[in-house]
Length: 227
Image 1 (cartoon, rainbow, N blue to C red):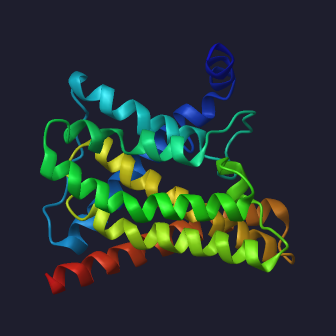
Image 2: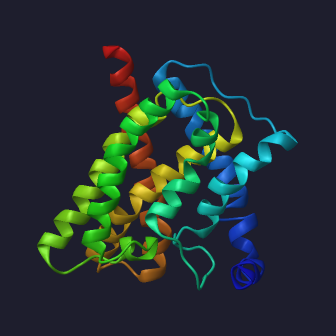
């Protein structure tokens, strides 16, 4: 733990700028407003969390700061997919403590996410998030990786359909979207041989994030019209 904290201290741009810090705060707020509009909910206010909310904010913010996203500052450590899922879902898990019906609904929503995580891990050859960016050469592994990412993203409209307001919940939504985007970023980066590496690092990730945000918003709008 001491080595991890020391490494984070040296990689302070990750905490203050990108993928945590200012990027996480602004991107999560914009994503929350977009998803709220698509779902027909009131737009979330841009407000600072109260001191009692910090315990919910820290876990998802830590995941965002540790995501292997380009062009973030280099970082020698990573986290596992299931650990990232647990930390991102900490606000939801804490909110449902003592509420059995809500816990049951959350458990049903987690089923596809866990299956997706296992499929992505099998395709990537491990649970590490960094491995999700490495595009495999064998087509069965490619299918597992993309299929797992597709299942993960397919499950998000249900998971995020009734997301409450609050910074922790906004960071959770952004983190879930970015984790699901990693295999797609890796696939596009592997196929973009004509682009310089530096240009691909700056161009491909935001293109994937924006595309998935629009698709997720459209899925929530369809869900709203049906129900």
